[in-house]
Length: 379
Image 1 (cartoon, rainbow, N blue to C red):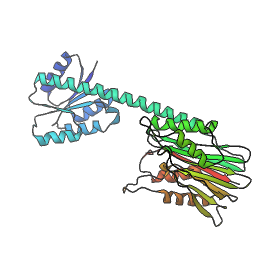
Image 2 (cartoon, one colour):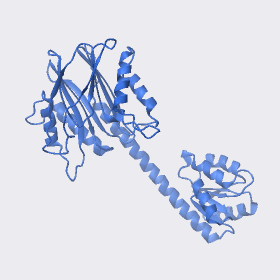
Image 3 (cartoon, one colour):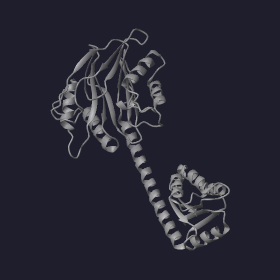
Image 4 (spheres, one colour):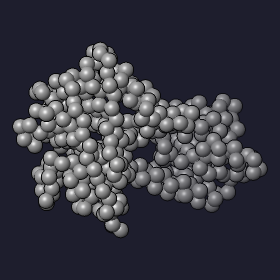
């Protein structure tokens, strides 16, 4: 039976409302003041509250504000019962969160109609909340699936790799992988598909599977620019598929200690050369090239660098530094590179330490975009 709570200090109004609504088949509970009403609403979580505006112990506006500020009561409809009929008074009520008004003296037909309307809105809100919960569960499962197919840590020298993947609330298009092409060559890449949700995650999963299985035709997987060219031909944007993605792809030759790389609209990888305690060199590794899928005629080029002993390479998605600050500015790439440098000096620093530093700068309790970070250490 549908639960309705009436909060009013007038016994006559209590009797009228309870009798009328009980005859309509509703389960009606009475509270004689705002404080008692708040206690009952927490216990009962009614579908609808009808509350008098003017009461000696907590007025209806304050009751309304507290109910609307309680997440567990988000689907509870609130009707203010009032003799105040001015536009200004109604504005105050709406600002406090009231969903509807009933004016005194009470017209029974109007009361019944407004209660029916409020309960319809309650049912709609409850259904929407349920669908939202189902969607969030599905996105969480999808994020867990993405996490499950990402590679484990690489712990055996001469190259060790640690990684982190933190999906946003909406699930984005981040993905990465690393594996030995042969005993001498290590492939490393990270991509980020534009947008959020499953439509962004699905192209990323396709790329991971294609590159992992090496099924792109006529591609030299040892040449990063050729890999990007093949991906660009395969994942062109269409009227049905409007997604594009950025990617950084590199191949490390452990014998020559040389890294060949190419990028397609992706943030630069950051290479710290030498031991952390020594005078170190910082290089941003990036080549020209449009994101994959934007233009069929896009061209990609390779670049290379030598990798000295005890160097570290960081590859990441832009979600790790495009953090909006309270002043409206974005934290930015330069600030993130500075954080990486400061953290690398500390011998106890690891990816968790870096992410803690990033999290401190994030004013929200979640990230707006997926966040991926790879740390590659070269012995």
